Image (tube, rainbow, N blue to C red; front, top):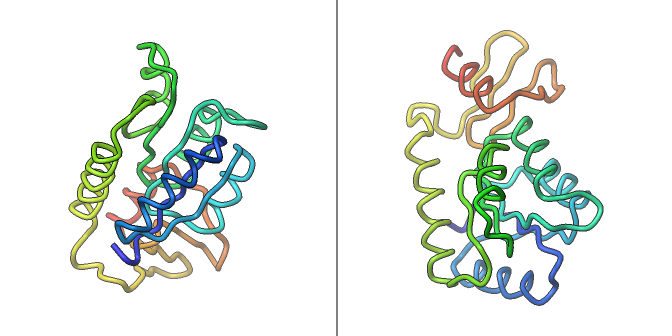
Length: 169
């Protein structure tokens, strides 16, 4: 867990710090963002292992952030929001979120969902790949960091494309 990075995107400063405190206490490394634009910058520069994403954010909605990030990375996304209508949940999940929790929520349940999501990711990671990036010619796939590069430039791959490229290499 000590090397697991979680990005928390929440505009409610009190909730943001409560989440940060509890995740750090659980042994996670945490990066925070307070709006949609900051979320994209933080996710792209830090490549988190999991993202907790509020829907109602300033500058850019959590839906839009989810849609964009899902095209760029495979990190699990947990939507955390006060919106509990069925349509909101369906839209979030259709855009690529892996799970959805409504506020108010139990911290124990949130932590259990985070553990479960990370456990699924760990189980899906190829065991033979280890920490060494996979290379073929000028293409390199780093399964641990969920990145693919060609001649040093990061490739913008969908999660399925990333999985397929890793499988083929």
